[in-house]
Length: 266
Image (cartoon, rainbow, N blue to C red; front, top):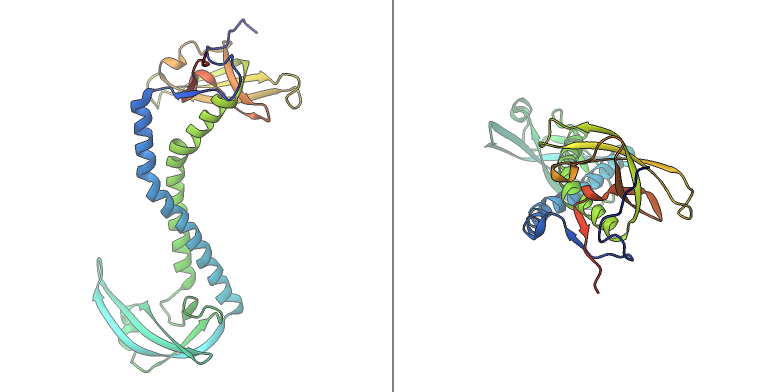
């Protein structure tokens, strides 16, 4: 391996003092974006719990639900977002209590229904107010739960990209620069990412864990970067990699990290 000196700031005991590499202005912008997506993140977490609760209730009604006899007690029709929406209001008794709710139906079923008509309801005895299915032809509880599940997956799938870029990736870089142990690594392959920002590259590198940190072995990694930090990253070049001694497979190329180490205080 070619001679390579570690960058200034790495030759000190951990934890190191670190600073955002791109300056306080962009660092402040990063915090602005974090605060901006915070309500969306909270919504995503809440959706996960609501969806899990809905799935559990759905399975409970399906497998251990009880069928009771209810009645249509009202009809309402109103203009929705794009078309008329029709709903039947129904009530059903269970263990001496009475429960009331509404269900959306199609126009044909709405016109055929009469207040006082019997309606079968399948419900969960422990939570009848929240877990019940009216037996009407146009209502499919699995479709309702499936729609909620799909929405939660799409919402959190999109959100996970922002959470990774704004929270997890910067925190990972911060921790590795603060606590990581430097080691020399050799670049084995470089891809030019022409579809991304100008000068963007993706480099594959490998390094050997020194004796004393787990087993001595070769570790391979990939990391992408762009701009001036990628200058000189070619096949066969030597770069500084920081890795966690207690988790050697967590590592990064120091020159491509979002943070850099400050000089030790005198």
